[in-house]
Amino acid sequence: MDNLQSKAENYRKWERKPYSTRITVTFSPTRVVEGTTQNVSLDGVLLKTVPYEFRILKGDRGVLRMEKREEALEFPCEVIRAHRDTLVLNLFQKQAAFGLAVTQEILESIQGKG
Image 1 (cartoon, helix red, strand yellow):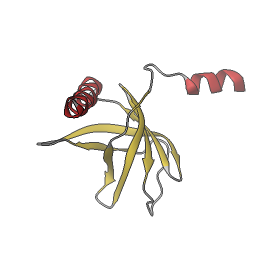
Image 2: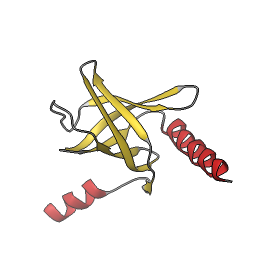
Image 3: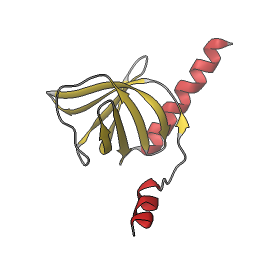
Image 4: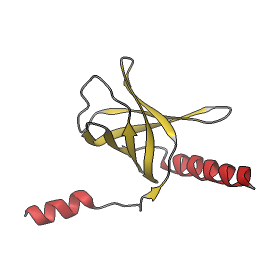
């Protein structure tokens, strides 16, 4: 049973790809986490966090915020795993918009190098 459970927990609908950008996650006005993404998929983010002084638990919900040049994009999220300096987040709405935002940022960074 443990083997089946671990396979189910590690199942991902979308493949994760390396991607690094600064984001914030707001759980409440006094519970805000900053960090850098390590990898992303269409419905999830692995976030390397800066130290924070409060407890975050699996199931906590918040809003992931990406700062773009002219606007901030926000995506509702839920904590799947929380460790001392890492959060695994599931995006449960606006997955297509998140994928588009990541794609646009990657294309802009490539064009800027050219």
